[in-house]
Image 1 (tube, one colour):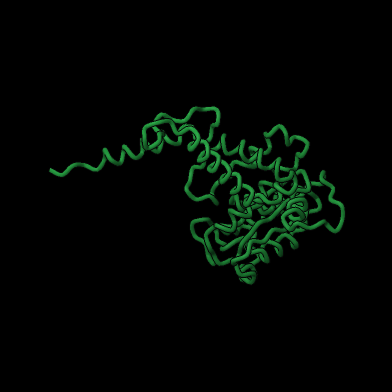
Image 2 (cartoon, rainbow, N blue to C red; image 1 turned 180 degrees about the vertical axis):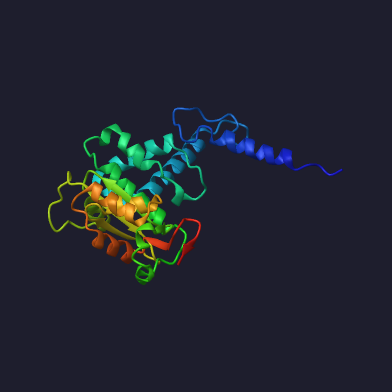
Length: 270
């Protein structure tokens, strides 16, 4: 009877777990499973590998959050990224998936408390990457709404594009984010305490970010949540009297925020 390969596989898994046990914690000793070819301790080599892993994770975060890095500087960002890496090991082999918890970590990172908008800037940058890697889908053609009888329009529901992201902030997170991602000085001083809402979409190959006018984020979030068109418009007005439905509809169609409409989420009609 042939031998089962399970013991070898389990042995490999056990070695990997033992090797990684102290990888992100410099305060822990080199795992006993790690040794030199002569059977001696490999503290120095393990420390080098540990440093390389931590640095690689910090570099990955720097690529994902360039605006955050520019706002705080390379040294501060490196320290924050390393602290995050040690507290939040990767759960995927794909580095672009790393850092989903980074905005929440930034919000609780005590040294960054004087930059209350920083976590929201990080959320926008994470949304940009998520939109970039989202599934492809053809956006809803603008002329579709014109084919729906006016009496039926209030009951229509919309199916969001996989790349659609909507972020609300009590700070000028959109303006701060875009200015620092582009590496340019803004045309006018940015008032950090002015609330801004951000729409992130990718109807084609290019990710687009835009600042939303008052009430539009509430309107779009209601649609994403399954509210009917009429109810979502009511949500926009409940959010602010400045809500302009016609402008909100134009923005969502031009941005390719939705892919289909229908009477229910189960029976969309493109």
